[in-house]
Image (cartoon, rainbow, N blue to C red; front, side):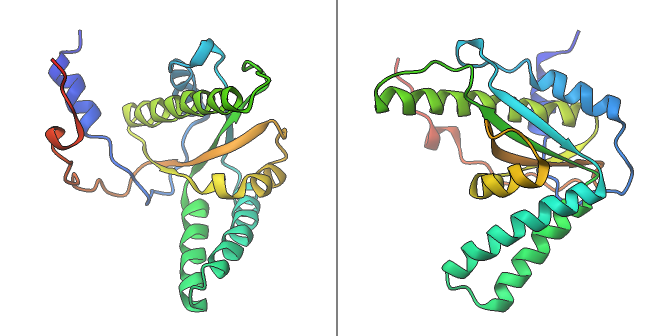
Length: 204
């Protein structure tokens, strides 16, 4: 039986890891991690999350190229200096290529409720993306339980069509996040957290 204090300690030791050892991650571990992720709560229990697992170097390179092209267009619109743009693009590419496993987390609305009015349509989409995010957090914790490091990257939201094209996934699978997974080179120190008094209102 796991003690409550041990579980809290485990949850608090998860870190965002961006640098990984080259060691491959066994498929069985990734399957276990995703299986655990699917036990997250979801609206109406529709489980709208979808996962695309990429370990092939060629597929990772193609994904990075498609995303980088979109990223570059956005950065140019922000009027960043060319050298700053190239630095960001290089870092993004190296992180994707350097991760042993990349997982794209998508939301699929096909089994969610449909409404005739815009307000409820928007709300249904929000609860579906919230549900998908639940699975994403559970995925990171499951990876942590397996001794893996991981980081949540939101960039696919800004490049949904390029990601779909690069990976040849259904159009109903809308990319929401990208996870880089692998065995960590090092574990960073804990970053300071805001005190709960600053982020919480207690109503008694």
